[in-house]
Image 1 (tube, rainbow, N blue to C red):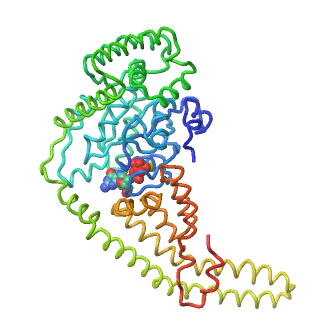
Image 2 (image 1 turned 180 degrees about the vertical axis):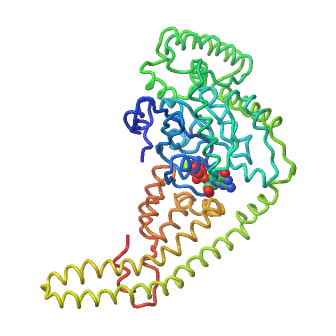
Image 3 (image 1 turned 60 degrees about the vertical axis):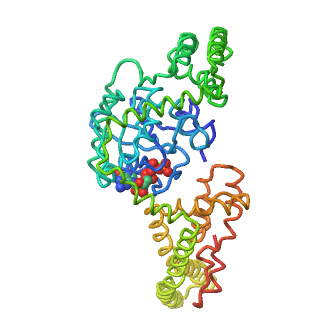
Length: 488
Ligand SMILES: Nc1nc2c(ncn2[C@@H]2O[C@H](COP(=O)(O)OP(=O)(O)OP(=O)(O)O)[C@@H](O)[C@H]2O)c(=O)[nH]1
Ligand SMILES: [Mg+2]
């Protein structure tokens, strides 16, 4: 699934991720951002590819690459999983973090949601701490406009020190704007300095002690201020990845270890253990994001999200949430089962009429019985049954499912069912792959990729085959006995 550190480490460009450069001048761009902000939509718009998009977070779970060309450059874009922070907690977040930090992209395009910029800026600031070769793409501008949220993009760009553009993911003009900004980045020269976050005085003093030694040990291979912060933060997994990417063990370098001891003592004198350091780093990021947003975002209606919240409360509430969910699922199944009968009958009548004609043709040609049996009664007949039995319910179920996905109802289903699923040792996200399983078990099993924990993912995969896919739905029509033959 591309979720291992091996596939996203520093050499992922040449190994696990297998980025294929058409020419050495191709520039690698990481398309990063919070979950569900339109990264894959932007990626598809630029590359013409068809990465899965839908209105719920966590669809992209592994890196995907695509190519696009501007008047000046060729770009290899890497669509990475959504992440709220580079202090990764889930497998997808690790994939995203490792590619941004150690995958060696030439630049990062950070996609943000214009309707909740403050939360998105947290990640932007973390990325800008690592690299100044970045641009911010404030997406969903149409939604922001509808909610009467105005963003001063020029001021935001000045505050962040990198180019900022406003986009609407599905709009062709946005693609042009993004390409222009990528070209602008490719011309950017000078050191890879990003935005600087000011931390509390003791932490800044500790960084100043450590940074020169880290710079000397690591050379120009990594942003030394960021690496010093990570060493002080003590995230063992991240430090391990960093060491692997640099090819040296930073903590074991004599000068670094000495400076680290001094910095540790200084922080402990100021009452900052590991936990407090992490808190201090996170709160500085949040504070800076708040400050920037206060200046650049203006909401005409303060209660703009009140209606959304009211609907949310109803759909996830105990008394309304469950009946609505069961009612909606019942309507979908009824439409699928009853609705599919008519096209199914028409299709099978048409296809079996063709079978009779084919039999007559074989008789006319005096073809041997075994050939007629293999081709017409074997291959053609099976194909005709599969198409007439499975195509109509799929053609009804999947568009309805996609509709629920696009209006954002599916994450609410997962939330509602999280508690009962948890009691069975599973997680709420499994309800989504189970729903998909009603359409097709193969799609349901593939959909289990969205589940973070390996144990829960395995459980979801193994139990998906107990979900009756539409090939096993009750069917009054005479195809009934054939349905069970075609269960995937
Ligand atoms: N209204 C509007 N919808 C958008 C825009 N960009 C993307 N979308 C929709 O937002 C939803 C999420 O888009 P994705 O491209 O799947 O988001 P993502 O960031 O790749 O999501 P993950 O991979 O789950 O992190 C989809 O339903 C898109 O159609 C936009 O500019 N305006
Ligand atoms: Mg995506």
